[in-house]
Length: 265
Image 1 (tube, rainbow, N blue to C red):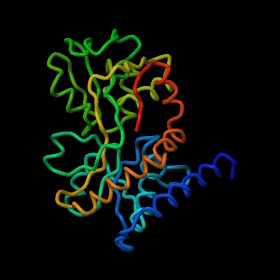
Image 2: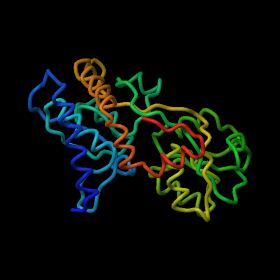
Image 3: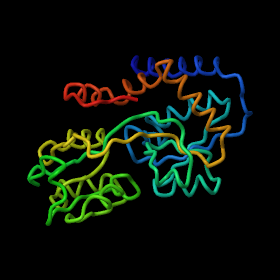
Image 4: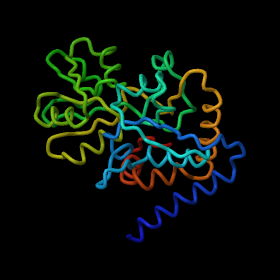
C-alpha cells in the first residue's frame, strides 16, 4: 500500500475514533441500508475491485460506526432512490441529493452538509457565455433525469429545448458532439468534465441556482434523523468534511478558490 493511501486509511479511522467516542446511544447491530447511485464520481462510484468508493461511501461508513451499525450500500439508479426509501428497501439516502421543496413533500431531510450551485457545461462553439444565453430559440440543453437540472430547465426554459438523459456521461457526450449546446449540472461536475474535455467544452460556473445537499430519510423517522444531524454536526466539528474535501476534491477546491467561487461542505 502506498504511503498516501495508508495515511488516508489512518485518517478515516481517526474520524471513527473521535465520533464513536462521542456517541452515547447505540441502537444495536441492525444493518444500516444506505441507498446511492454509484455513477457520480468522485462522490459515489465503484473502484477497480467493484467496491463503492468516494465521498458518500466514506461518509456512510463513518455514520455507521457512529451509530454502532454495520453499513450495507445499495446501488440504485437516482430516480429509484426515493421509491426505495419509501418502501423500506433502504434506511436513508446519501447520494448527493439536493434538498428541494418538492422532495420535502415526499421525504424528510437531514441538516444540509454541502452547498453547491447549478452550472453549465457548454460546447466551445455553442455561443453560450452566460446563463442568460440559455433560453433562446434553437438551443438544446441536456439534463440528467431526476436531477434539479431537469427541474430548473422545465421551470425556466421556455424557448430552448430540453434533452433528458439518464446518465451524466451521455449528457456530456451530447455537448462534446455538438448535439446539445450545454449540460445543466452541479458546479463540481461541470468543472471536472471541462477539465476532461478542454478542447470541446467550457465551464460556466456562475450558478443559475444555489443548492444544498442533505441526507434523505423516511418521514416520521425522527429518531434516526436526530442521530444523523448529531453525526453531521460532530463530523464537521472534528474536521471530517475538510478531510473528505482534501481527499477527493482537492483540485476542485483549489480551482474554485482561484476563481473566487464559494466551495464548502
